[in-house]
Amino acid sequence: MIGRLFRLALLFVAAFLLIRWLFSREQRQTVREFIRTLAIALLGSSLLFLLLNLAGVRL
Figure (tube, rainbow, N blue to C red):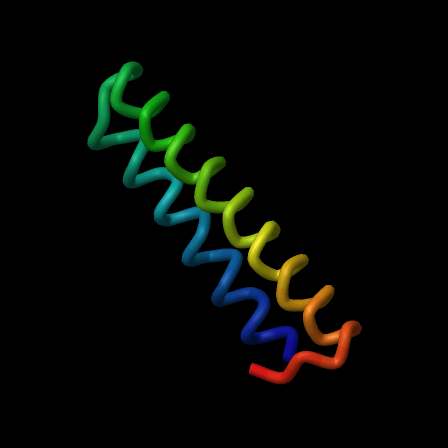
């Protein structure tokens, strides 16, 4: 379990460093906005599925 978490953290750090190295400041801002929008969408969809599950709707 700890090994998987370590590999996931290592993957995120490597992706962060790669984005920082490859993209300019304006491009990094665009990537940050995309990731933020994606995170909000994922949280919204999980909340929607949770509410549907609590209401008894099975998908």
